[in-house]
Length: 56
Image 1: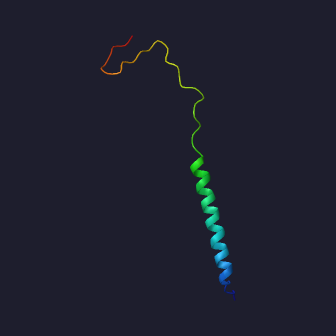
Image 2 (image 1 turned 180 degrees about the vertical axis):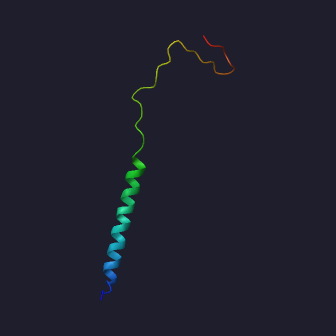
Image 3 (image 1 turned 180 degrees about the horizontal axis):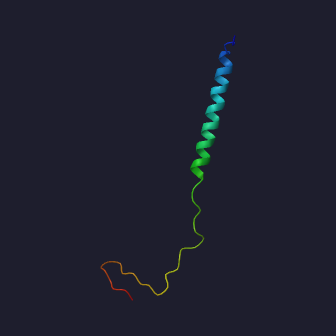
């Protein structure tokens, strides 16, 4: 027959599970998509601030 675990052992397992959960959430929050090194260059294209300008 299985023995009942001690209360301190249950709390220790719960605390360890909480630490692992927090570490996992922190790693997931910091794992985002990589940013581009430089913004893309727009060659020969001009955009107007307002209004719909024609194509160059």
